[in-house]
Image: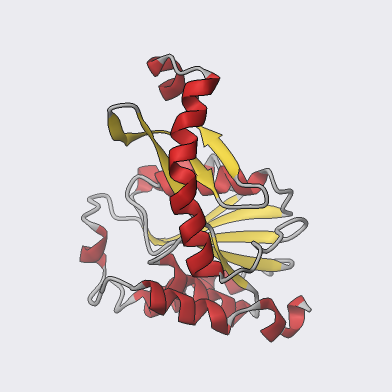
Length: 219
C-alpha cells in the first residue's frame, strides 16, 4: 500500500538507484505516471518527459485496440497484427482509423510539451513509468515504441501490477522493476491511500520543473 503517487515514486526511485543505470531518462505515462516519474527523475538527476499514447480502436468496437500511436518525431504506429488480421483491415482502412486519432494525439502533445520536441532516448537508459498497471497494455505499446528509438536499454518501472502483467512486460522490456505484485489485484486506487485524479495543469507544472535545461547532467 502506498500513501500517494509521490510515495510510490520515492520507493521506486530507491530501487532504481541501486542499479547504477547509465544515462537514465524518465518517460512517464500521463497523467498518473508523471508524479511517480518526477520522484524518480529527482533521485536519479535525470530528465523527465512523457510518453503520449493514443489507442486505435477497431471498427464498431473502439475499446478493442487494433494498435496505438505513440508520440514521437515522427510518431510511431504500433499494430496488434492479430486484431488487424481478424478484422481483415487493409492499409487504407488502417490509415482512416489512425488519422482519426491524430488530432487528439496532437492536442495532448501541445498541452503537455508546450512546443518542445520529445527527448531523444538514443543510447540512453529509457525508464518508462506509470502509477501501476492492470493489463499493462499501454506500457507494452510504449515499450515497443521506445525499442525502435535505439535506447541503451528499456526499463518498465511500476509501483504495483499483477504477477502475470509483470511477466508480460518482461518480454517487452530489458528489465522490470515492480514493488508490489499482489496475486489478487484490485482496481489501482485500492493500492493507494490517497489517489486523486490529476489535472492537465498539475502534470504541466511537474514537467516544467524537469525541463532538460534545468538539469545539469543533460546539458
